[in-house]
Image 1 (cartoon, rainbow, N blue to C red):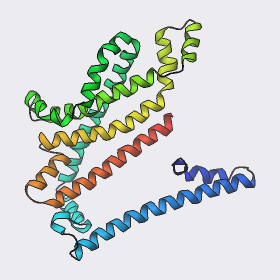
Image 2 (cartoon, helix red, strand yellow):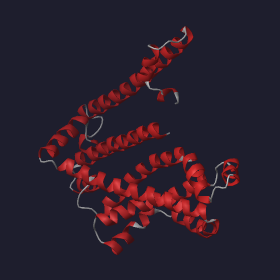
Image 3 (tube, helix red, strand yellow):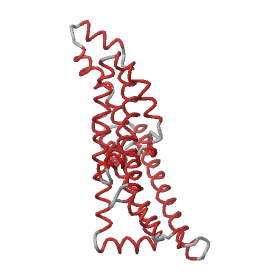
Image 4 (cartoon, rainbow, N blue to C red):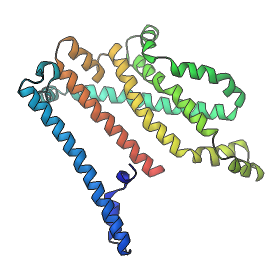
Amino acid sequence: MEENKISIRKLKRSLTEPCSDRQREFIRYHIRQGRKVRFFQISIFVLLIAAWEIATRFGVMDPFVFSSPSRMASCFAELSADGSIFYHIGITLLETFVSFFFIMFAGIAFAVLLWWNRMVARICEPYLVVLNSLPKTALAPVFIVWLGNNMKTIIVAAVSVAVFGSMITLYTAFCSVEEEKVKLIQTLGGSRLDVLKYVVLPGNTHTIVSNMKVNIGLSLVGVIIGEFLAANAGLGYLIVYGSQVFKLDYVMLSIVVLCIVATGLYKALEQVEKHFV
C-alpha cells in the first residue's frame, strides 16, 4: 500500500537528479509497479462496466431493476438538461461540508477540553461511549419532530453520526503524547497551554487529518440518512423519489454519483494530508 502512494511524477523527477545505478533501478521499479497498479485498477473498472452492460443487454440481469451504464448515461443527460442533477449534488455537498466542519470543530474543541480537565473527562466518558454506540438512524425521526422537515434536521443528523466518535478518538490521541516531551516543556517553565500548542496539537496532526478523512465519509453517510427522511432535494431525496415512482435509473445514477463524490472528497483530504503531514 505504501508503494502505491509514491508519486510517479516525483520518481520521474528523481531520475533526472544525480544518483547511483542502484538508486535508478529502484526508482524505475517503483514507477513500473505504480503503472501496473493503475493499469489493473482501470482494467477492472472497465471490465465491470462492460459486464454490467452486456448482462442487461442479453437478459442475464433485468435492466428495469438493475439499470445499466447506457441507461444511466441517458438518465444523466436527461437530468443535466434542466440542471436538476447538479442542483441535487450541490445540496448534498453543501450539507456534507457544513456537517463536516461542525464535526471537526466540535470534535477538536471537546477533545481539548477533556484533555485539559481530566475530571470533566472522567465524568463525560460513559456518556460519550453511550452516545457513540447509539444507532443514529433511531434519532432521525426525533430530530424531525424537534427541528422540522428542513436542512437543519439533516445537518444535525449527519453531525450526530460522527461527532462523538471523533471526540473519543482525538481525546485518546491527545492523552497518548510522549510524556518526555511534556516533562521537557514543563521543566523549561512552560504552561499547560504551551504543552497543548507545542506538543499535543503538532504531535497529533496526522491523527487529526486521518480523523478528517474518516469524518468526511461519515458526514456524507449521515446526510444521506437525513435526506431519506427529511429532504426536498439532494441525492438521498433523489434515491427515495426514484424508488417510489419505480424510476430505478434515478436510484442507480444517484448511487454512482455518491461513489464519485465520496472518492473526490477523500482524495481532496489526501492532498491536505500530504501538504500538512
